[in-house]
Length: 182
Image 1 (cartoon, rainbow, N blue to C red):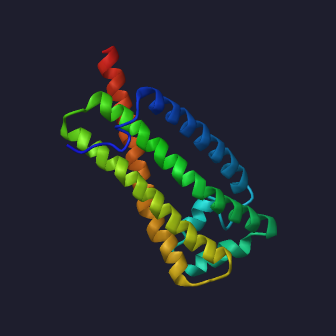
Image 2 (cartoon, helix red, strand yellow):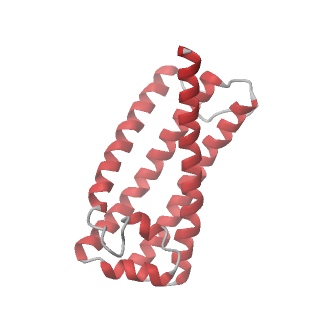
Image 3 (cartoon, helix red, strand yellow):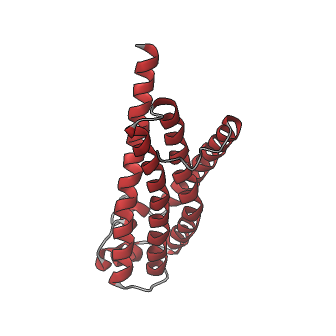
């Protein structure tokens, strides 16, 4: 049986870490949404996410050229904050999976799937960091297709892993409620 990286935490430590991660993730989301408001325009309809998923250098350049100086500074600060955010969100999703997994699936195959998903979230964080490096290079006017491709091809699996993690949490939470109340 696989072991969760959170296995050695006491319940008190686990709860404190969860509260810290909820608070830090929410605070970072609020900051990044504020910064993202400077990035959204007719070319970059979804803010930093449009930049992450540009894929093609021409699209990346169009996005950068659509930003004024304040927008470019906001993008840089947002990418810097994202290095904190990637630690916070991946750890939060991972510990929530751990909590549900330990409660519902200990000793089953689904438990092992949950542990694999927890470990995958740390790969998502690594992919996010690599993606950020590509985006920073583009923002610093190192305009090469390589950087647009790196950002795109690391952003896509990052988003997929995060989505699977969130869906796993939601389905397990609903299952827990059904099990408890029905």
